[in-house]
Image (cartoon, rainbow, N blue to C red; front, side):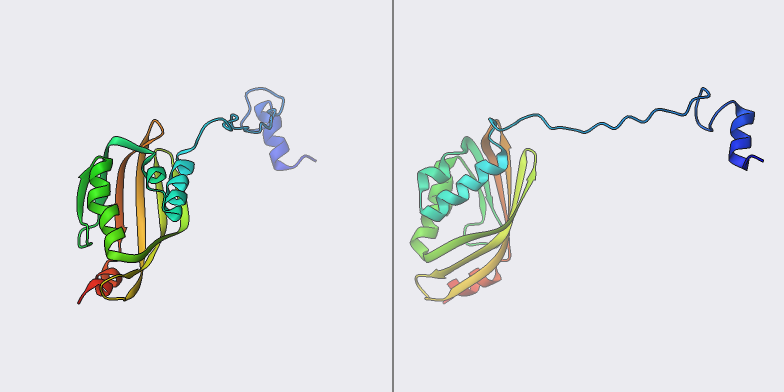
Amino acid sequence: MLNKRAERDKENGGPVGTLGTAAPVCRRSVYRPPDRSDIVQNIDIIAAHYAASARGDLDGMLAPFAPGIRWTEAEGSLYAGTYVGPDAVVANVFAPIGEQFERFDVEIDTTLDAGDRVVALGHYAGKHRGTGRAFRARMVHVWSLADGKVVAFEQVVDNAAINAAVAD
């Protein structure tokens, strides 16, 4: 005696869910991404910026910036605002950091590749020149890229520790 499924298949002219009497053919395909070894990834561009920062290489830090980059420092931070162009970023962010802090390290814990955006999570750590106080603060950087150039940057940071280190 046939089981119920086999009886139903016999009545319907084949296995349930197929158009003919033969069982469907299942072909296994394996996705192989295209070779992209010759293409610089956005995440690599941002990693190079952070490496240049660690070396104190300002030219290397600025190299991936588009002429019209929009650089936004978080509200409540020492350098809050949006600055347009590499010269404005240097004048309003990088130069003041160098002047006011004995040490200002960017420690990246995780970098996420989101296509035309790269998100970096980590900490700032440093020591203020005037007060001698050290700090460590959680931060997130959101980078936007187009055609291999950074067109926008946004900082999100827990400013409390930095502001406390600076306060008289």
